[in-house]
Image (cartoon, rainbow, N blue to C red; front, top):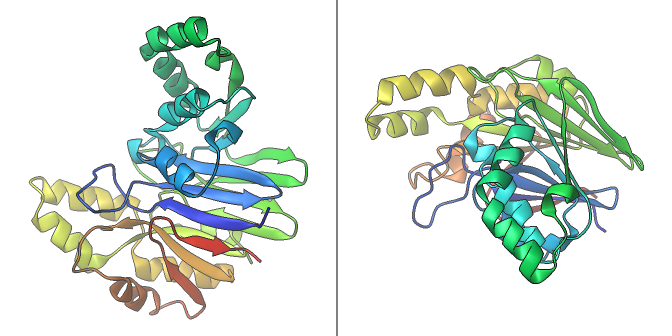
Length: 284
C-alpha cells in the first residue's frame, strides 16, 4: 500500500452549502494501515470515493468533539457494518468519545437489533472499542506510533494535535488550534504538517454575512490560526510540506487558493498545498 494522505473534507465548521466542500476528515495510508482522522459529515462517502471498502475499517482517530470532527463517527461505523464489517474497530478519541459512541448505539438500538436478528450480522457494539487518550503516547503497534499534543482551542480543552510515525515518515495534524508555538517542536521535521487555517479577508466577509458576526469573530480569532501564523509554525518546525486543512472560509468564491497562498508565503517558503476535498498527497 502506497503511503499517502487523502483529504476527504477540508471545510472548517459544520455547515454545508450547495457545491461546497465537506467538513473535516482525512485518510492516512501509512505502515500498511488505513487511518481515518476525524469524522465530519461526509466521511463515509469520502472514503468510498477513494476506493476504500468500508468493511476494512479498523482505526479511527478523533482530535476533539466539535461536531465538524465527530458528527459522522457513529454513522461511519454503522455504514461500514451494513457494508459487511465483521472485524474489530478501534476508535481513539479524547474524553467523551465513548459517550458519543454509546449514545449513537442507543439511538439506533431498534435498527441494530433488527439487523442482527433479521440479517444475521454480528453485534456492532461488540466490534468497536473506544480508547480515550490524553497528551502523550496514543498508540504503538506494528511499527506505527501515534502521539498527541494538547493544543489551544477554547472553549474546548481536550483538543489534540496528532503525530503519526512509521517507516521513517511522519505526518502531523494540528487539529483546531489558535496560534500555538509548542506545535512547532511537536511537528519538528515532519514530512507533512496538516494545519488548520483562517483567512483574514475571508473572516471579515464571513462575519459580515452572519447574524451574530461579532461573537463569531471573537470565537474564530481566539481559537483558530491565521494563515500567516500557520506559515510561522511550519517554518519553525522545518517541516518538508505544509498542507492547509480545515479552511475558514472554505466556500467563499472570492477567497481562492492564490489568496491563501499569498498569506502563507509571508512566512513560509517551502512546499505548500492548499487543501481541497478528494486531494491525494503521496508521502514518497
